[in-house]
Image 1 (cartoon, rainbow, N blue to C red):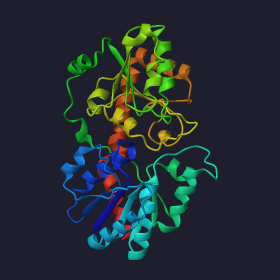
Image 2: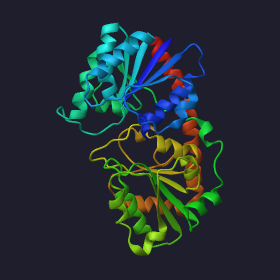
Image 3: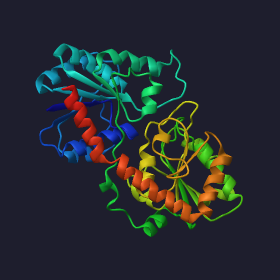
Image 4: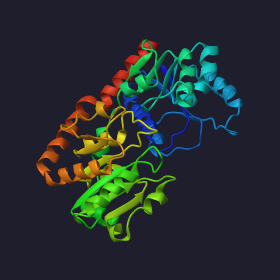
Length: 365
């Protein structure tokens, strides 16, 4: 079976990481032939080159260049894929004319988040629904995402993320990494994400300031980059600057998570709803207790009070209280971490995700 994967770019993000993991899984099946099309030169995951699959760059210059449709059509005619699997709404839009002209089935993986209360006129919903009639199936990594985007039930497929356990098999020594990052406290609480409006680093920093007003044995790691990084740097009072570390983007994110006592994901739920967050799975795979904003697909990962803690959005007080509670109740935090790892192994493993996609491909083909 020939599968053509199409994605707008391979910038750093949850969808792109999920695509990389799926390629790893599919490479174990010699009966599946893969090709990858990227509509950008951005490839932030260099390991894709180690997976030995043909990659074609169809750069969109200018951004709305109609010749991309023609170039994609010619490529598909040459490769002769049995089906096209698009990752994102724009890649689906680029692929639809070719799929129809050549009679190729289209799997549409354009549901990546689960925002609450999408109005009928919301452009995200409008763009997504434009692609539904031309898609054999619409895939989301969360049930919440399928509901949020009002996907027709007969086309809706939920396939959870698959975590590759090999990613945590060769971690850096914790003491060396702490020295490198200049961590000077016994306790470390971290949040990993982009400094963009979708993630709520503001609440994370405010919670850290509240905690540091009572205790000084905690360092807060805020890992990532983005347009709002400067604003958040300025939030930290000078007296607490040694307790807040902003290391930027890290390629050794699993090793960084391994030095945490608690993993946090605070989401700006006013504009964004998580699908299935890769960083939550990474926390849990490394047995870290997780505190995350409730909503979206996050309750599909975390069982509140068992494998993690769900808190209201934009509440620095709730986040500070829960961080303090887990730091004080070490055995309960460890139990949550162990339960989280069991959840990832049972429900979010790479083999199960790969199997689910193969079954979908066979059903579509």
